[in-house]
Length: 219
Image 1 (cartoon, helix red, strand yellow):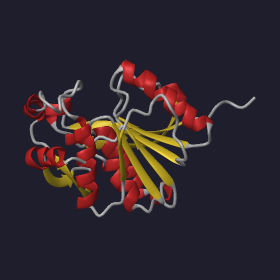
Image 2 (cartoon, rainbow, N blue to C red):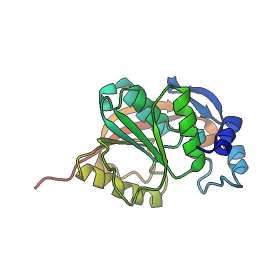
Image 3 (cartoon, rainbow, N blue to C red):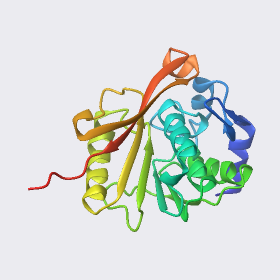
Image 4 (tube, rainbow, N blue to C red):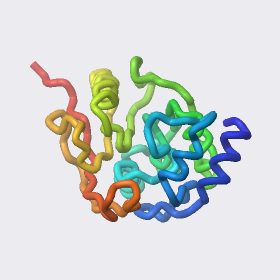
């Protein structure tokens, strides 16, 4: 992470417990729109507000599930895809993953992940990259929180995830009923009522599910 990016995260996102997973602390912003406006320069994001600065419902649900079911990641090579704040990656590390790789395209996200991992004593490798055109490499499980927020993102994401499953990698997704989640491809694993800032979702609680991507149909 660059010093400038890390300083930005520290300045505008205070370290605080995650509402649905208070065992973990993240750098979180209080006010989404104001923070987005501050990123108009070097760190401009096309997706307001910045994903790294908030514990989104899908990520909170997925992290809660992993924390409560540590066998999900214990001893495994984990990929946290479109990692945002790194909440899921941090949780995977704390539940005994053999290795954790967190990937995001946003340099501020990568800085936040590094800071959040350090704050929680987690061991997370951080990559600033767009890997959706590729594959999950040697990951044994792919975790993705709240990634079906637009049709364009959903189309690219599901292609990557289906390739991963075809290659034998387990895929878990946290999603608060976003319109672009292709539900027929998934089976429900768990469901939670997750607290969320009103400024993000226009509600204070989001019913959020953890889904597992089904494997390819067998002949």
